[in-house]
Length: 388
Image 1 (cartoon, rainbow, N blue to C red):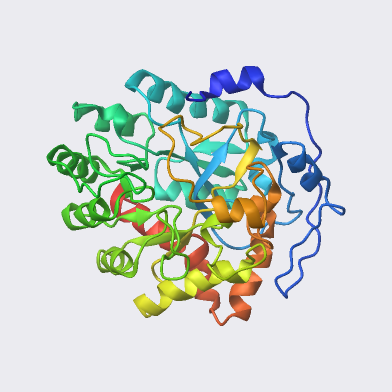
Image 2: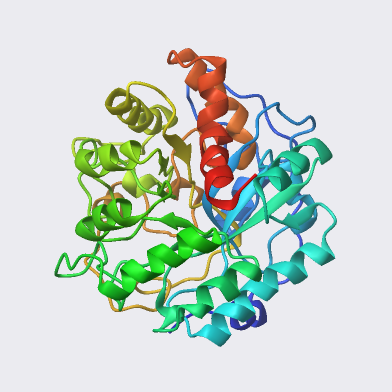
């Protein structure tokens, strides 16, 4: 059963959770703060994911290309976690057009209610929000089912604030193949038309959750750079949600960005015996950098939540039960989808972005490279697709 935000809000536990100041980060890559030191970790254990406040902002434009916000999130302080733009899943896929549009409108209403938040429409909005100490809501769709066979909906939704979208979410639909479906269907003729329309009106094409052949077809057919918003390298972690080197090379050739995800199950190597760390995550950045010969095509998409992630017995968006691609992580680390340990050790709290940047520097990335990885590369793509 699909969990709408309205339905979720009725069920969500009420009551705020205090958000502490950020504890000092350990440059060795160990996880900080611990659950004993940080009430936010205890809050997450109780079901609600909260994040630490940075008393002073860092210098980078930090774009998280994919994350989840739930209605009981602490939105009054969301602009103080060090994130410049949150790539918000605007509605729970798959959805009909009315449900999807209601999802978009929800975020406009939320931004009106919280002065530290604003819906992103242009790349310059993101730059301005950084200067003003605000956080942007980058509205994204994780499926294309809402389009049906009516291409006019793409422009209508873009005008309503949609700025990035997947055509397919894990299972095949009318546009192409999903990464967890039985076949590798490829981009449909209608899917080609949708790619063209996204190019025309200015919607970034996101390839995560999409079948291998369909991702390559989208990249080939698109006149603009494409991105993965939250996937990792299959060469390091073989998993149907991760992407192989041919896909990465195609994305790089099109001047796109591979948004690498810090979600634990997609960072767990086959020979690992413990929870993945921030250094395991940076290994994926190294892999993309080695293929590209530079750091110009690396981004970050955490898939972290703000608020209480809804419990579910299978896929959270109500689609058919897929093969359990998290089984080993469930057994080795935790099967609790709300646990902080569901994310990598050393970057399970947004404010630890400072700690991650320090690790990137320690691993040999220049200051310019760090700025690109944290947000500059995505900003380059946004400027090309949306216009400056």
